[in-house]
Image (cartoon, rainbow, N blue to C red; front, side, top):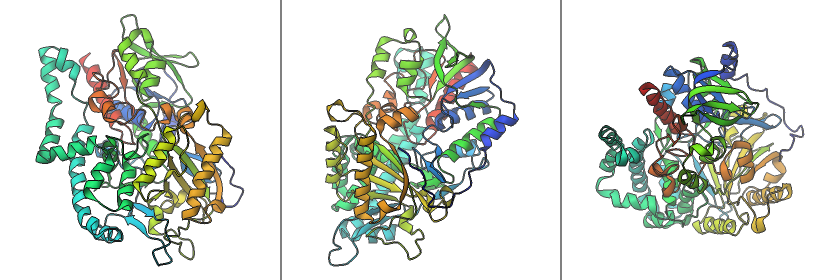
Length: 581
């Protein structure tokens, strides 16, 4: 649901025509009957794949069904004058070499790094004071320790060692992100030459093992145990443990008590920006500006990008090789290879002729876990939220905590678990986990003067409600009202500041952005659906049983997040195959 701006704020000027679209128009860019490569979907991974292929001399076209590029990394003006990162809303994981190779700064990418980066206000009487406590974390370790010491002096002393421990694990995982997983099919059944080649893909695994060294058993526990078990071994204070645990469950239909939740935490701490390990930031102009920069890089080198062009099916010749795609309007576009940025389910169960795929493969794709807990709510407000734990400045200017990920209902890991249990019963959480971000606190181009855009990443909400009931407008509004009521307790006056809102439940995220089950990662980031097994075992190297078809989206290794690695890796796999032909 979207509401109008009610004229409360002075409208800001619309952003200029995106550079990628200008370049495309200047090139003439009419649809041709044949390309070397076709990319299905202009999400960030698809755009990255197209940019790399075009730079390698592979004439590439991208077809996007929506009116706007970016997939989930998109900026949309839902409320007049307010520009929202409507789905994904933060940047950290984009691979460093993609910045460099695609010259994204040259193509207009501007970032706002956040420091501090995490703020968890408490609901309490202040323990004798008038102001409730809060936990504010940033890049200054001494200040972090001072903040943590409010709750536990022991935890404050241990925290630097915990950070170093997690940093080492992130360093070990890092090499695995930029290469295809070990080709187990070639290793088991290939020719001698293929087996020897497959051994070279073991190098990132061996490098990871050397980095972890004798601590490998402890790191293995992080990846496989419930994150509560891991954090309990380090810390005693619940506000710190719950704050850290949010990164272990965000976007995942899991509890902090679920085995394997630790990997999701790792997935959210292994990025970085501007050379700062673990840093997260806002893209100036919203996440769509990142997609525009990637697209500009691609079109500058000759790639063609078409919006409102829905691919209806992948074409296959009589020899079982891909020969292009058919658009929804019946237009046939021939190509030597096709890369799909859509989910594995859409790619293989809807777009690919089933007779060309093995039944066992199709069965495994159909069984992928796509459950999602996320309802994203985008809110336009006419003033900054003022938290009881950190009241606003007299003139309402942004304070350091306004640039953070603000964690609400996150004072205790038990709260997160109870919210999860509600969803398991088919109910939206009674006290949902809320990650509140205010990107306009650092990027004033997003909202009219004095106003702000607020991103609410909330969970847990089931795809289907109890009794098989579907989400309708009444259910959406009731859940959003519950979220707003929760915020109101921490920041009185928030509800009165709301100018408009956009509510996206799991079915809405699926319908608008093509995210199966509303899952932001295309399928769960659980250990049984990672690395060798993403999307399914023996098909984790971007290729599939159909020759010439590649998976380049979040459903491929290394998974979800605005990372670009799947797009880059798939492009290189397709290019190697084209060269061998």
